[in-house]
Length: 64
Image 1 (cartoon, rainbow, N blue to C red):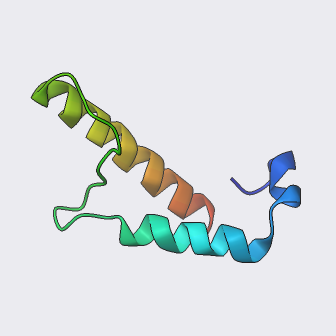
Image 2 (image 1 turned 90 degrees about the vertical axis):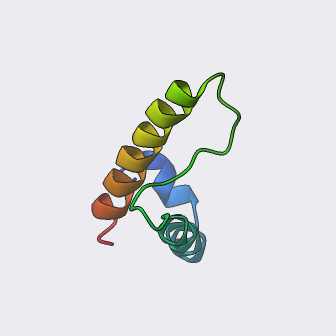
Image 3 (image 1 turned 30 degrees about the horizontal axis):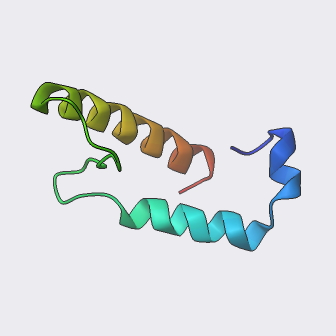
């Protein structure tokens, strides 16, 4: 996230590449998937919502 102290330690090109990766991870239905196994279909859906909100917040905070 911009403005956090750790951001100064990370190369701008690396940040840009990771934001590109995050953007391309968006699914056709507009959401983002999680990269771990959930215990149930309901849990997978809940985590997918969390992943989507986090991805959108990160992209918006970085001007994407």
